Length: 505
Image (tube, rainbow, N blue to C red; front, side, top):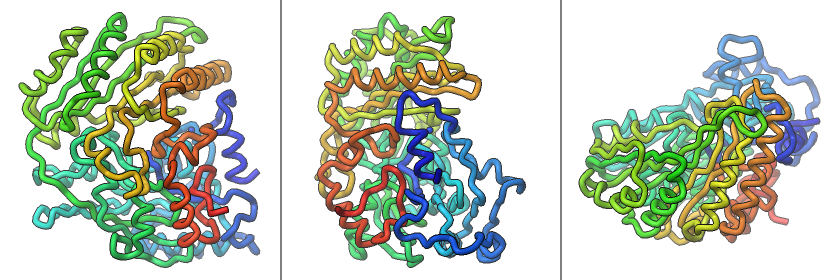
C-alpha cells in the first residue's frame, strides 16, 4: 500500500481507529504507485547523492535530530516515518530535493510548519523541510515584510516587535506563515485588516520541473491569484513571500469565562454582539469539554469562553461587551490594554496537541437557538479521552474586512461567511480503540447535527480527510479556475495528495 492509499484507509472513515490526523500546509505525494509526473524508480534511491547536493543536512532514520524533524504536528500520523528529511537551507536545496525525488520516483511531501490537520505534510519517502528557511525582515519604510517559507507565527511576531507595523497572522505560535497564507490565513486581526493572503505582494515558487518563478500581480498573475487562498502544495513549493504591512498602535484584549449553567445565555449574547459588532472587534467563542465521559467514566469538565482583540482602548471595549456581561456575568474576566505584540502573546494558543480530528463549517448567519441547543447537547454527550485538550466547538466571528473582497478576486472564496465553526476531538496513545472509536463517532454525529445551520463550505486550512464534498466545500465556484492554473503549472499532477486541486477533467 503506497502513501496515498494508506492515508485514505486511515483518514476517510470516522469509525476507523487511526494510528497516526494549519494550513493548509505545503505538501506533495503521489496518489498511486506510478503517479502522473513521476518516473518509476529504475534503481534504488541514491540518498548519498542527495546529501551531496544539499547545503542543509539530510537526516535519515537513526541520525541525530531525525526523530524531531520527521514527526508531523498531528501525532495521529506519527507512524508515517520518512526515509529521509531534507532540511533545506535555501531555494536551491528545494530544487535539488525535488529533482532528486522525481529522478528516483521517491514519494515526497514539502513541509513548512508540519501542521496539516490531515497529515498531508509527511511521507514514507522524502520530506522536503523548509523549517530552516525561517528568516523574517521587516522594512517599516516601505511597509513590507519578507519571510521565508519556514517562518512561523512566533518568528513573525518577534520580528514585528517594536516596529508599530503588523500583518494579519495566526494564533498558534508554531504554525508556519506559509501554510497559513496559502490557505487564506485567518486571525484575531482579520475582521479589521483582512486575511493574510490579502496582504501578499510576491511569492517565489519552485515548480514541478524545478524552475523558480517570481510570482506577483504582474508576473504569472494566474498563479498569484491561486496562491492567495488556493491551498498549500497544489501548484509548487512556495519558498519566499513579501507581504504588505499596516501600521498598528496599542490595542485592547479580553477573555471571558462562564460556568456551564450559563452556557446558553453566554453563547446567545456573544453571537448576537458579533453579528453587529464593529470590524475592529474580534471573537473566538469556545464550548469546551475534557476529562471523563460516558465511555471513559469519571466527571467531565465543561466550560464556555470568549477571547478577542479590539483595535481601540479597553474602556471602549468594556462598553461593547456590556450587553454580554449583563446577559451572563462571567466567572472570570480580563479586559485590558496591550501593545499589539503583547496582545498576540495574550491571544496565543497552540493547535490541538497529541492526536486530533477536526471538522469545520461556515455559517451564513449567527447560530440560532436550535443550533445552540444542539451544540450544548452534543458537548454533554462527550465520551471522554486522556488528552487534556479534550474536545468541543469553536466559533470564530468573520465578516468585516474579509467580506469586502470579492470572492473571485482571490482563490479564497469564503468571503460572505458570518462565522466559522470548528468541532474537534483529541486523544492520546493511552486511549484504547474503544475510546478513539467513540470519540470519532461523537465528532461525526455532532458535525451532522449542526449541518442544517451551515452553508456547505469548510475552511481549507482546517483540512478534513473525511469530508466528502471537499472540492465544493473548500473552493466553491473558484474550483474551475484553480483547475486551469493547476493544469498550466503542474500538468503532470506531480503535486498530488488526497485533497489536492485536481486537474481539469
